[in-house]
Length: 248
Length: 357
Image (cartoon, rainbow over all chains, first blue to last red):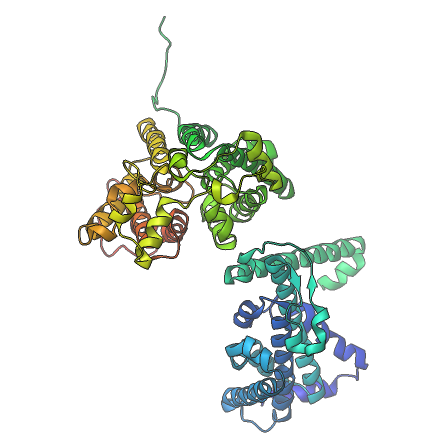
């Protein structure tokens, strides 16, 4: 079985420090292999719910929870489930996790539940979640899978909140509007009016604004990546010894 | 003395720069008529749009490390700016023009790769985005046509007052927005008939909607653009396919539906000479970059726009529809071009040969 082979391999390699083991997972989840930026997964909820920061944050946190739950569960049973039926099992696990989260939001954040509506149950269809279950959790230990779920979820939520903030500021001139539906009645002060007397650029709130906003975010990400690889190349050229070593 | 010339005796192809310049010049009759009908706001819109468009174009060309002077001289940004300026409501505040030109030049044109690479007509992208984002400003800031002033007891603004309003949103004392503006004929017809509030003959009896041909006021602007467009046709700047198929489809559909219920469908002439029909048919739909390039494709393209204009005007959510129709048909252009490839001379028509080369 593939999963056991990989495990024996990792046991053979010399023991790494905790940081060496977990830092790459964090880096992957937040930037290098970000669910949205690098894998382009989960775009449907991303585009649909990012019309305000509070909505984005609500769905982002729900997705983080589902990812952690599903990653941990999949990792726990990874040695018991036969590979032929692993995908249906993953789907059932993810669906149960989403149902649990949905019931929690329904019970304690009812207004948020009404705003997010169908997009909470639709977390099931977020490909990023099953992709992590298949690509990571089914091959790694529980603690690593937990951390990967947290980081992948955080990476997704960060993009979601960034896009939400962008669209809300441009579209309505506010930030954290309706903060009370998520943080409770005492949190009305969180709402910030960035521009007063703002006409509102409706397009940013509407679906086309989501596509255009995501395109600009992706362009910014690619620009930063390009600059980074250029800098790495320059550093390598300055050290010809290192270049030879890498060529070998 | 005879000048010795050798073959080929072909006319040199018109350069992009010259073509864009001539098309812009041929819009002048329409612009002047629009200024006469709707006030100085039209000229100020065009002036602002040109400044913004050339600045945005220069900035983006600098960022893309392209030769700025070469690309600015192709006059395409100028033509886009003039079309936006004419299409915007005459009392549009300056930031409306600014946002529109930004989306036209930066997003719709340069981010797609510049002139020749843009899928969508930049000026119409600007108009559609503004109409969706700022419906209040885009539909209510139309100054009352000069022919209607006495009937509705309206007011107009002088040049300085117009500038003051568009740049600083200040109206002179004793002038209210409601006294300056009026609903467009297309808007009145659409809302009255959709809601069943009035029939065509009832609207006509009020005397503030229908002119001799089309909507009061806009009919003259349409006639002026038609004149400019016919001159373009004569000069060979555009082919007849797109304008003719567009106008014929729009006229045919309005005749077809109008012949059933005369009192709830405006006449074909009203459709042809109201709103942006002529501007759209001759100056917008014929954009060489975003329109279909094959003769048969152009006929389908124009007919599609004409049909969509009628459909959206009659049953859609907006009174006029040139921008949306052009954008929707822009999306169909690759398909149209693919299926309407003309037969290459010397080759036979082969039905099996329909696959991708």
